[in-house]
Amino acid sequence: MGSSADKIMKKYVKERNTLFPELKVEKSVWHSKINDGWRNVPRGIVFIMNIMDNLCTGSPPSKVYLTLWQRSYESYYLKELNISSLALESGHTGQRAESTFKKKLALLKELGFILEKNNFSAMALPNPYLAVKKLHDEGRVSEELWTGLIMRMSDIGEESFS
Image (tube, rainbow, N blue to C red; front, top):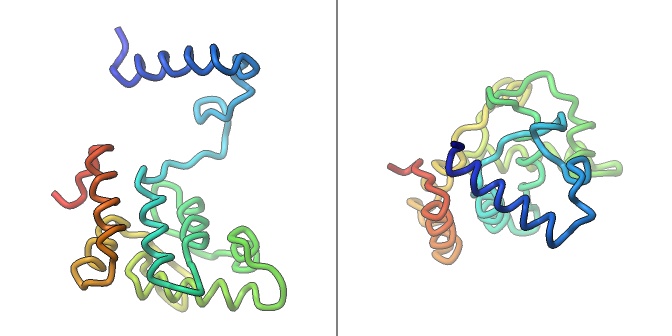
């Protein structure tokens, strides 16, 4: 007998295939057990990204953060990065792409979402939930976003604050 998660997955796949028969062939959907190039991210990442963007009006850094997250593997450590490639991947183009990217790295550092050494030649990604909690404790996170994050964490069983 499978786990509870396996049962739910089978139920959802059956329902999906009934409602969307064109997706019955497994290659019609992207799946981490079949396809390469996947990455685990916290299930509350969208709230976390919204919070960081809310704190950086006019210069939202969340795409840069997600780009770093996607490159860090399970070590949450990055080094020897190609800044121009990362800038492009995170949506920055043109003459100011690299400088804008570096500006957003500095914002992420200031907010506590990244740690860095030697002018960002090495970076680590600490627990983003704890970075948000520190920002909240400093009075920097809106109550609306904080409440939404707390509710989402409860829904998914996230216990970083325990």
